[in-house]
Image (cartoon, rainbow, N blue to C red; front, side, top):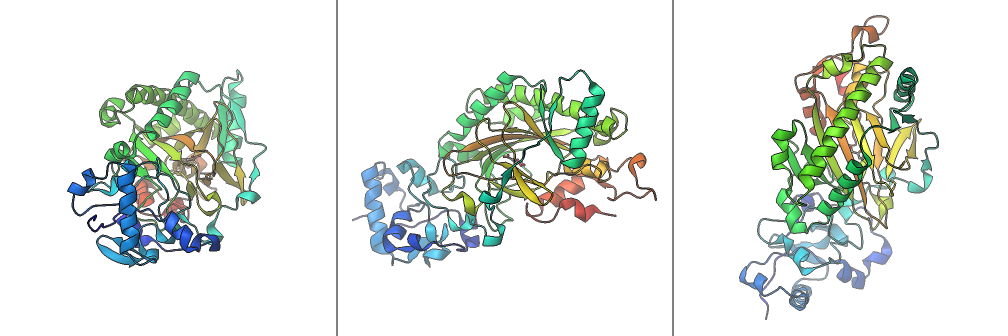
Length: 443
Ligand SMILES: O=C(O)CCC(=O)C(=O)O
C-alpha cells in the first residue's frame, strides 16, 4: 500500500484564500472530486521516483480520496476544511502532466499559472461582485488617437500628441521606427518563454519587487488578497550590458532578441518625450533633462486562457508609476481597456502599432495637464494573450517638479516635489487597485 501523502502548495495564497463565489453546479460531490487535484509533496522522497507514470499518479490520487473526509484536504501536514486549503473550494484542476503535478516537491512550488491547466477559477482569483469587469458592458473605443510619427508635418504631430495626452492620456503610434522584425521576434520569443516547462520557469520565480529580473505572477502577491490571472517576466533593461547577463538564457535567442527590441523602443520613447515636451511649450529636451539618465523596465505579460474571465482580471485598473509606457499589444487578442469619462473602453489591437500611456510622472511634470490613464487588462476563455510593456522611468534621484511655466496663476503646482525613488517605493508598497498614488503627493 502507498504511504500517506501530504499536500502542499502556495501557502501564502492558502492563507489568503477566501471562497467568494461558488456556483451551485460546481458543488456536487462528483464535481468537487473532479476539480480537486492539488499539488503534492511526498514526505518520503523515495516514493517520488516511483510515481513517474500516469498510473502511479492515479494510484496516489486514489490514496488521497481514501484518506481524508470529503470536505477536507491536507495542507502542510494538517488536514483542513477544503475551503481553507490552497485553492479554496474549487481547487487546482486537471493538469497536463504528472511532471507539473509534482511541482510541489521540496522547496520549489508551483506559483505561476502559465502551463498549468485549470477547469475552474480558483477562489482566490475571484473578485467580489462589485469589482468584476462587467465585460458585456464594455464598448470598443472608436476614436483612439492613432498618430503617424512618419508624418512630414512635425508641428501637426506635436499638436496631435498634446491633444491626445490631455484628452485621453494615451494614444497609438504607427510608423514609429521600431522594425516589424523586432516586434515579430519579441512576440515569438515571449511565447516560447512562457511555453517552457513550469519547472524551468520556476527557476526564475520571485515575488520580491526589488529584484531586477524575475518571473512572477499576478501583481504583488505578498500584498494583495485577490490575485490576477497573469504571469509576467519583469526585466531591468538599461544599461543593457549591466542587466542582460542575468536575463533568461532560454529560449537561447532571448537575450539577443530582447536587447535589440529594447534599444529600438528606447529610441522611440525619447522621440515621444521630446514631442511631449514641445507640446507643453517647453524645450524639446526639457522633460528628458528633468528625468535624468532614465531607467528602462520591461514586463512581458502572459495571460493564459481563463476558465471564468467575468470573475477576474489579468491586471486590475491601475496607472503606471513611471514616465512613459510603450505597450505592444498582442497582434490578435484584445484585452487592454482604458477608462474614459467614467467608462471602460476596449482598445482593439492595431497591427504593429504601440499604445503609448502617459505615466504618473508626466502627469506630475505637466502639472496635471496630461493624464496618467487608468487602464486594465481583461482575460478571455479561449486563447492566451501576451503583451510587452516597456517603461521609461526617471532616474531614482530625479526630482519631479513641474516647470514654473506650467504652474497655476497663483504659482502653485498640484504636486509637491519628490524624488522618483520616493514615489516608486510608495507605489510598490500598495495594492494596484487603490486610489491613484499621485494623490498622496499633492500639495
Ligand atoms: O496587457 C496589457 O494590455 C496591459 C499591461 C499593463 O498595463 C502593464 O503591464 O502595466
